[in-house]
Each structure stands twice: as C-alpha cells, then as structure tokens.
Image (cartoon, rainbow, N blue to C red; front, side, top):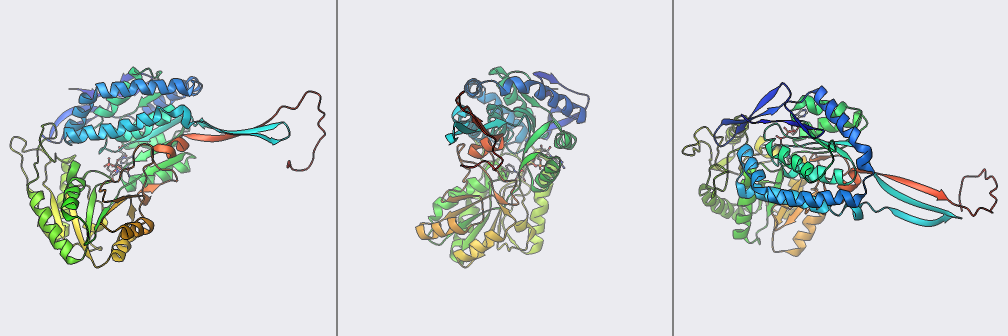
Length: 496
Ligand code: NAD
C-alpha cells in the first residue's frame, strides 16, 4: 500500500510510524501516511535553514520564474491532483477542480513577486542622506493546514512565502495528505532548490514541535478555532509571528425583496457543496419575516431531497461523503441535539445509503427550521450539510444576531435594496461579506480573513497581507557626503 511520506531536503522519508488514510466513500484504507515527531521536524527545519541563505539571495525575478513553471505543472497534473483530493477527502471532482483553480490563482499572484517586493525610497531625507524601506524574508516559516482544502490552503501559504525568499515547512492534514505532498513535489520539479520547501506529515506532535522550534520564525495556520487559539498562544509565546484562521458559522440574511429563486439556488451550493465542509459554507439562513422563511423552507426542502449523493470520484454527484466516521457521528449527534432542543427538522438526511458504498460516510442534506440562538446547532460549527433557518423581524434584528455570534468569517445578504445592502456592509461585524454572493471568498489579489474568533493575528491569509506576513520591513538611512565636506559632531538628536 502507498505510504505518503515526508519530503525533507528533496528526499522522501517514511519514518517508522504511520497512520491510516481512509477513502470516505468506501470506508476502506487507501494509503498510509508517515507520522512526524520532534526529530522529523528538527531535520526539516535544518534543511530549510541550510537552503535559506542562497534562496534569500536569489533575485525575486528568478524566484518568480520558478512559480511560472510551477503553474504550468499544476495545470498539467491537475487531473492527478484532483483525483487524490476526491479519493481522500470525498468531495466531487468538479469541486476539487474549483479548489485547485482557486489555489493556483495564488501562484499566479506570487508570479508578480518582484513588483510586490518593491520597497519605498526617499532621497534627501537630510543633507546627502537617502532612506529606503526594504521588505526582507523572515527565514524558515511553517504552515499547518486543515483537511477540507488539502491543495488550496497549502497554496494560500507556501507559494507566496517562498516567492518572498523564505524557506517553508508544511504540515498538511493527516486525513488527506496525498494531494498536499504531490503539489509540494511539483514545485521541486519546477526548479525549486532542495530544502526550500519541506513537508512533515503527522498530527499534534509535529505541530507542537514546529511551534516550539527556535528556527521557525512564523506560523500560518488554518483549522478549527480551539486549535487556532492554541497555535496562536503557543506560537506567539515562543516569539513567532502567527496568523491562525479558525472556524465559522456563516449567516445568509434574506430580505423580503430578495430574488428568492436565485437565493435558493445560491444557498443550495453554499450550504451543501462539499457536504458543508467549507469554512465559508452558509450554515444559517436568517429570514426577515415568516413569509420569506415559509417560502424558503418549502423551496429548499424540495431541492435538498433531490440532491444526488455518491462517491466524489464518480461524475454526476452533487455531494460526496464527509471526511470520517467520527465526523459523521458528530454531525448526527448535532441533529439529535437540535431535535431535542425543539428545532423543526424539515429535511432529515440521516441514514442515506449509496448502493455499492454501504460503508461510506454518507449523509444527506439536512434542514432545520425555527432554530433559536441559544441552541447548540446555532452556536457551534457543525461542518456538515446542515442548514439552520432562524426567523427574525427586521434587518436590524438580523444584523444584531450576526454580530452577536462568536465567529465572523463570512456572511451574505440577499436583497434588491441598495440602501439595505449598504447598511449591512457598514454594520456587519464579519470579515468577508457578500451581497447576493453566497460564498464571498476574496480573489487571490485581495486577502482572506474573518473577524472575531475566526482569525487570531493581525494579518489575513494570501494577497497583499501575505506579502507583509512573510516579510519584515528594514529601513536603511545612508549618507554619502562629498569627500571634501567636513562633518562636525552633533550632540543633539538628528533633525532637520
Ligand atoms: P483541525 O483544527 O482539526 O486541524 C487543522 C490542523 O491542525 C491539522 O493539520 C491537524 O493535524 C492539526 N491539529 C489538530 N489538532 C491539533 C492539536 N490539538 N494540536 C496541534 N495541532 C492539531 O481542523 P480540520 O478538522 O482539519 O479542518 C476543519 C476546520 O478548519 C473547520 O473548523 C473549518 O472552519 C476550519 N477552516 C477554516 C478556514 C479559514 O480560512 N478560516 C479554512 C478552512 C478550514
């Protein structure tokens, strides 16, 4: 059976410990993955440290050329990458292609690194004195990524970090590490020197070793909020720059004037695409007025019952399985909890079986109506195909509800009213906002980040924030007086 290895200094290492990787559509083990420990992390960081001086001094235009070749290879190997994603994660091949495409857009942005690294220069800040600010790489930086975007989230991180002149250690999710390793190997094939990008597989032990290693200067993390909080607290306590993106509960607000049919189509994709296992998935529909809620529940129920569920690797399905048996049980536990708390289960997706895939981790779309804010199904991130309908009386009530939630990743308003849209955009305490756009994931040349407990740290992921996150400013003030000029001592603080 295939063992998904570490990648250290250009070499694949298996190590002695492994974990099983499952195909969630069949429940079968499809690979083994190496499990890194403190020693593996030390080896990877040492390789990255050794590669750093030469890579730092490589002109940005040459680094960019590696990224151009990398884009080409990602395109050529897209089918292999997407097959691995669909096999190990469970999402459909079309969805995997969308994930890869969004990831590749970050490589496209990194191709422009010479322009992005341009400093700021001022001549004559004093007599014969010029000053400039330069953006220099940090050294070795690490990325820790979640299972739900095994290619895209690593591509949010290492292309820009490396294009900026850093060396990188990636710790992918142990649940679906195959595509992460493949995209890392392709960057070496594109001409990246050995040791600039390293991959350590595994879980908690490898993560904690990265957080404590003195050689790691910064950590980018994407995952659940409890782990994000731990990463931020531990990483910063060890003197590292940290950005830690966490979980979410994303609300779509529907006003009575919304184009309901289009909102329903949009919500189907945003709530049930990828089985709801997206940090930007809509998991709450906030209906302003009972008429909107009644119509929405009717229209959604019909479409949810018609969802085509099956293995992501086979064409024609809307939804594949969820990632693991434990996660399936967690989701069904939330359904029981919601019923006990008094919410109305309008569509029950439990107990779905797919012929020929009876051991797969499948669940159909679920829809709860009359959910209230104190219920666990409202407060907590379920990360499954479960949409909760909450009824409110006005746009102001909807805004208050969204703002009171602990998460602030994404949100969306469906309306035809420009004034309402503007008010919503101004008042809502959420980092990424859509107006009639259900999944407002910023494009690669903006940055991605939630508010409140969806992001710990000051800088968001990818885009312009990533250039700042993966570099530090140095300001040089330099004087070249004419040889003949005499300079007297000045004991006062320098000023003009
Ligand atoms: P997770 O937090 O369980 O795991 C993320 C990473 O952290 C993995 O690499 C894992 O090995 C590691 N890890 C897990 N537990 C750890 C621990 N106790 N100590 C140290 N490391 C640990 O997340 P997941 O289940 O893989 O991904 C789903 C979560 O990620 C959801 O909450 C989702 O909202 C979130 N997510 C957020 C964003 C965002 O941009 N905000 C994007 C994608 C996913």
